Length: 332
Image (cartoon, rainbow, N blue to C red; front, side):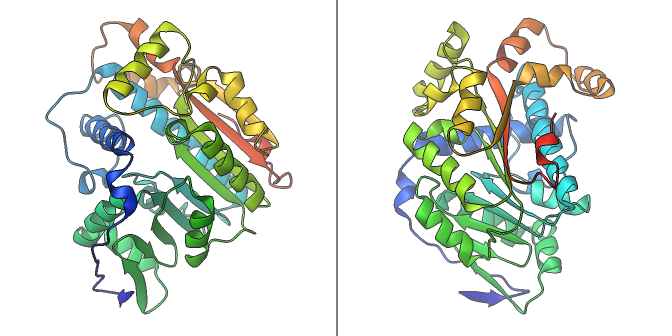
C-alpha cells in the first residue's frame, strides 16, 4: 500500500514463518541485547540502537562485550572499505539484519550507498518497522532522503529512495529476488552482501543456494560473513550444545569446522576470491589505542577465556569481479 510520506502507516500481516525458527529468532534478540549493553558501557558509539532494542538488566561478561566490539569493528571496516572502493556508487544487502543500525550510522558519516536493503523474517521486520514508525530519530533520515510523494510501506515491507526493509525467508531465493526487485534492487550496481550468524542456521544446501544466488546475480559483488568456526574441538562442541539447549540447531555447522572450510565454501559457491580470519587474529590487529580504551572499561579476569571465544568465531569475505575497483585488495 502507498502511505502518506509524513504519516507512514503499518498494517499487521500474518506469515507462515512467524511460528517457525523460534530458536533462530531468539538469537536475534540475544545479539541485539548484547550489542545494546556493550554500547551502554562505552565500547562504541551508537545513538540509534536504544530506539530499537531494550537495555537488559543482566550484565554481560567482559569477554562477550569485547567479542561484540571486535565483530562490529571488523564488519564496519570491511563495509567502509567497499564503500570507498566504489565511491558509494553501490548497494548493500544486509541479510538477516535483525536490529542493525548501520544505515543510520553510514548516513551520519556521509557514506550511504545508492540504496541500503535489510532483509529478515517478517516477524522481526514488523517489530523493526514499528520502532521506525514511532521513533522520529529513525524515521526522519529515511523521509529526508525520500524523493517521492508517497512512501511504500506495510506491515512487512518499507521501500524508500535510499532504504528498504523486506520481510523474507533467505532460504527461498526466488521469493527473495522478487521482493528485492520490487524495491528496485539493481543487478548492475556493485553490491555488498552482509551476513552475520546467518548461514550457520541454514542447511548446507540452503546456504549454498544463497551464496550461489548472490554470486550469480551481480556482476560485481562482495560477501561478508561472520559466524562460528573451529566447531570440532571441545570448546566448539560446548558452544554448539549450549545453542541446542536453547532450541537452536546449527544446521550448517559442517561448514564451520575450520577457516579453510569457510574459505572453500565461498569459492565453491562461485566467488572468485575468499579470505577467512578468526576473531583473535582480528583482535590482535585492532588499533592499539582502541584496545587500551576498551580494555580499561572492564576488568577481565581470564584472558584465556577471551582467546578461546575469539578463536571460535571468524570473519570471512569474498569477492567477484570488480578488478577495476580493486575489490580483491580489500583486507582487514
